[in-house]
Length: 173
Image (cartoon, rainbow, N blue to C red):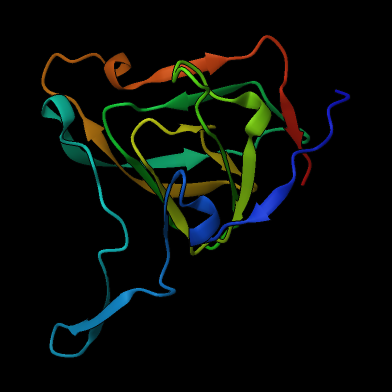
């Protein structure tokens, strides 16, 4: 692969804002609850899943690292709901996103962005945001808040994939 490596930016709320929300303790509305024994970091991210009868669901994804350099050959999006990823261990991981093209039919592969997330940071992709599937640097589990469709709705109703004929970028870590 003779593609230049994709620049890796630190994940921050400001840089990620066009794509969704960063889930982290920094800057959170902090509330003491349970008779002062628990600190609640309140309302870190909205979950938007109600379109067309969707309901929230929680899952655990078990991520496995990809071979390095990581070749970016596809992106996906979920037009009917947001999707949140929160790591369950303190391992850094990667987030790759792209804006949509001018007619909203595909990602702008020439405008990919790669963020390095700390193990205490999660993200919520806004509905319709093009993103790469989970990219971990070490085996790692994530808690996922996602949309479940009404009974009988195929999974494909909330999944669009854009596949490239060849790698459009590489990530070296």
